[in-house]
Length: 363
Image: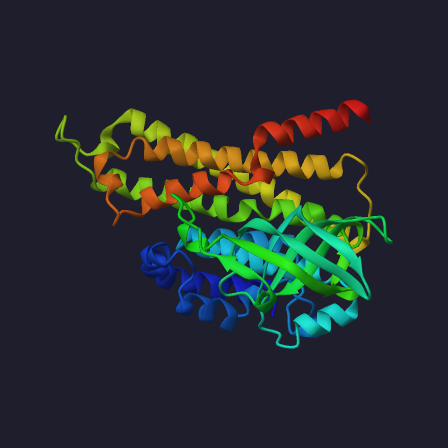
């Protein structure tokens, strides 16, 4: 399936996703109907290898899809980013691992990539233990990618990414949050789980091979949410009558300025993110090395996209008045979701800016 087909399918799902957005928040995970729609449309397999039933498309397509889905439900867009991006990471695992995971091509994979777990060498693999947070989309997933450190005393050590069946770990139902409620980003606990060598691979062979992709695609749902917030604010301007003046808000110059500035911010953010994604696709297709500062640049640009999106959303939300606080009003949910998404570690502007500056100054 090509990019245009998938984009049309994503656009077609937006009205239904918008209707289910409150249900997703109440469930604190994706409704089954939404999962069925995403899987059935082929969206979750956008970056999956063709050999295993996917479309094998790139980061640019991924960003376009998740940002569109966010117009209906940001939590849904976030889970789509997770499931699809992890398929791209799985493509770097040995053939045996891919065959095992994609025995069912429609299977979903969640993850908690930070190497907070511990693993010890075992005959034919490792034994994994630990507790991981923020495993978005784990309720619907059959597999998990979990980061860990492997003890070096009995063989190869370092940072590893383990691919584990969900049935072998525990999901802790602790996702009680203010934003991105529907992502079900719960904790995962593993206790001495055996992971065979073909599913326990070093970061250098897995995560680090596509780190730029894994960072850039995080911003897609946040960008799409900010665009939806600006669009909703535009519509509200022509509807809302101010109690202080009994005139429509669209007659206020200050409101128009907010609309214009926020619109320009999300427009600039999309240009930056899509350019970054296109460059990543070029690197992967050509097996190129973009130099030692490349990942730092991707982190900087991705975090700046989130910065612009959050500013735009905040500006229009604070001018939307008390009626925007109603649970039935989408803009309050978008505002919460944007701020929750921006809290992701890889979207931290201060850390990304310092990392890029250090890389540039040392090069």
